[in-house]
Figure 1 (cartoon, rainbow, N blue to C red):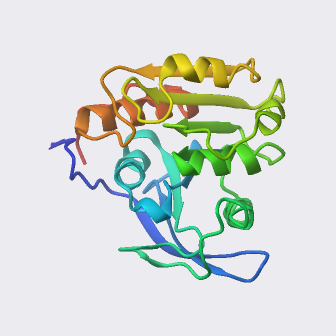
Figure 2: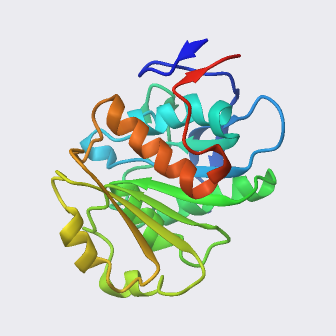
Figure 3: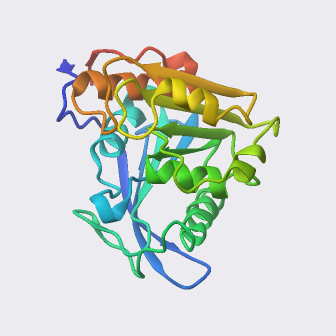
Length: 237
């Protein structure tokens, strides 16, 4: 019996992958799959701002890959956007201010479709939420899950394109966020009537601490595979 703590790494099939962008860059990534059976859904994760230390190994995304294939039968795809380096490796190219990263999102989605991964969700964190909102709207996905959305790069017109488009938009907003707190988020997201806003008490932008991590992962699972919600506190395998 394993108690689910911060460093828990549960069984999964881990595969190092390379994404190829339309502008011919190679991006470093990893796909984590359940050990047996088909995934119930797929999380395509988009990391925080690389110029501020964000990468595919940022802790919430790493813990999603370490836990959710085993606990919730999910596939988790992580990758470093262009010009980003992490313990997993370095992606080619240079930071594109959220503009040329359009090709990175497209490459991840193309890979997921080519592998036949089911029920795709974009899961962005901070800068990654901007990529999800800017470039996920017309894609074949179930929806987007936005962790700590700052809404710095996403225009009002881009937000409006999500209105009643048949895709779910779920925003997890920390009570103590540095950039956008829940009351502000209600106003900023008012162009999206189907928005599901989850205000998380006592949490901060970086979701520090195991309690914050569990809140995030539980909300993700509740959205994409509710049969596995709530996540267990222990794992027997």
